[in-house]
Length: 506
Image: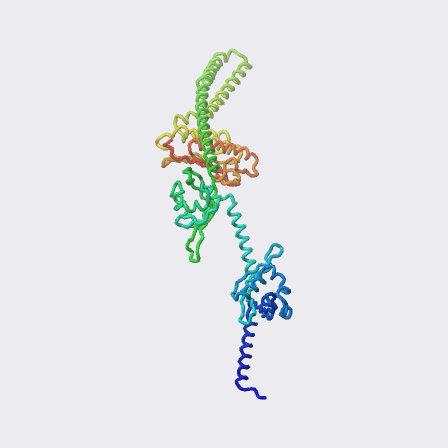
């Protein structure tokens, strides 16, 4: 029997729609499962499964179709999806439902379901596998939680600020450092960070450094505590820039160094007291040297001179009356007396050279250079120009004693044959330079960064003792508000430079 044309067309169209539906159904990457029920929503049987669901569930559809949902998706009932299916079937209202599957305290799977009821009474679940995204989110959350725990518990202050001086982020340690009860209180209270600075210019200087170099390290400034007291803060910070190179914010860390600054201040005060005491002791020592030298000159020196005169008179009167033996002894006595007198003069010169008091520092340096050359055989050249006005006696004494100590070290340790001394006084400052052409020594520390006590004198016999002389020289320089610099290199000699500013103000 022939089929009518209209019925053939209808069957053809239905077939086309079915193919289109199937193609669409299979090509979707999301999972689609169709359920039917024969007992008015009590039991759900899997009727159809697309390729997307196969891939998500890692199982072929043949093993799913015709099975009860709870038989093939074991966790569905416990996770509540079966109840959702029953509810949607009953009400006809679509629902969105997410399921997280956890095993061994970790996320094993995550499905995001949309559940619908079709007009045929069938129920459809359209879902995606969000496991990877959720696992990443969970790791991020854990990482953020770890960061937050560190951020909240670290004892160092952490901050983020706008360039114009508002706090964006503050951790509890920073808030506590400034006396605030919470980060939120500090952020809302401090409207202009520059007002925290005791010296507002420090904030400007901080910004200039960060904007110029991109970071700042160990920036110290005195700032205000919430209660009005002053605290010292050390900051490490860097600039955060956008893709166009514009500074978005500053972020970094802060440390309360108030106790350290207080200890430093107390130490400086103690050092100043010790230096004042040292200067006083030096002044007393110089006064005693002068007094003792005068006593030797006035008493011992005069007595020795008188004895010499008497012995010479006796020698002249009894020369023809005594034996040769007595003449020899008398001559020996006169020689011994002359040597003793010369030694007394040397002692008096070392104690307090009268030329320093009478003619000034440059004359005293030239005089001592000649004495030193005669004693050691080391040639000493002294030049320079003194000011028209005599220096403060303390400065003259210190520079002269430093020269004595430097020449003593040269004679003992350097092996030098030449010493050059220059005294320069100009622009209210004095500069004394003492250079020898000896073997020098190796300094492993730079003077500007280390104390002389910390210098390391390498592989030269006796130089370990020489450092105490250098320390004495430095203390003498500091006692007159000057500074001492040592320049030396093995095989290239040693240079001692003493610079004293504001010489006429002392």
